[in-house]
Image (cartoon, rainbow, N blue to C red; front, side, top):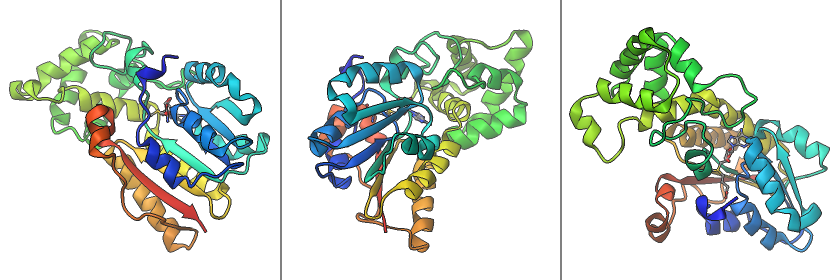
Length: 296
Ligand SMILES: C[S@@+](CC[C@H](N)C(=O)[O-])C[C@H]1O[C@@H](n2cnc3c(N)ncnc32)[C@H](O)[C@@H]1O
C-alpha cells in the first residue's frame, strides 16, 4: 500500500512510552499500513518481534506483503484485537508492550469503496471486516426512529439527531437508503441551513455514529484494553491513542479502575497530545489523545 496515504500519529511518543528495548515482543493491535510497527521493529532489533493484528482483510494482506523483509520478526494476523489472548498464545508471544491506535485508516476513507466518507458516493457499508454482518445500510433502513436518535446523539454527539433520524425514516419509506450520497442529501435537508455552512460537514457526526455502531467500536475497545492488560508481562506497557471523546473516556475509566485495583500504574498521568508541529503537518492528529499504563 502507499504508505504516504496514512500518516502515523504521535510516533515519537509511542516509541518513548512503550519504553522499547532490543529483543522485546510487542503487539500492534491495529496494524493498518504498519507505520508504527516499522518504527517499533527498528527499536527492538535485531531480534525483537511484533505481532500485528488487523481486522480488515485487505489491509492485513497488504501489510503482510510490505513487511516480508522482516521475516519471522513480524507476524501478521487478520482478526480483531479482542481475540489477542488466543492469537498471542498461538504464536508464542508474551508482550512487553501493546499499542492501540484506534479508529480507521485514511485508506478506509480514500480507497476502500465502503462508504466511510461523505465526500464519495459509495455503497453504505462501513465495515472494517466484511465478514461481519451488520452494515450501515441495514442500520439506517431497519432501526426505529428512536433507536436512530439515540445512536446519532450518543455515538455522534450530534445536536440535530432528532431531525436527522426523522428525515431518515421518512426517506426510507420511498426507497431504501443504500448509498452515502443519498444519506448526505437526507442529512443536508434535515438540518438548519446555517449548519450546512460550517467548517465541519453536517454529515460528519452521523457518519461517525454509524461507523461506531457497525464495528461495535466501543465494545471492542473495552474488551481489547482489558485483554491487553491481562496479557502484558509485569512492567509491560499499554499505549492507547483515541480520536473520539467517548473512546478516550472509556480508556480513562478502565485505567482508573485497574489502578485502584493495584493492577496498573500510570508512568505518565493524564493525556499526551501531539506537538503543535505535528498538528500543523497532519490534520488528523489534532484530535489524537494518548494514554499510557504500566502493568505492575
Ligand atoms: C488508525 S489505524 C492504525 C494506524 C497504524 N498505527 C499505522 O501507523 O499505520 C486503525 C486500524 O485499526 C483497524 N481496526 C479497527 N478495529 C479493529 C479491531 N477490532 N481489531 C483489529 N484491528 C482493528 C482498522 O482497520 C485500521 O486499519
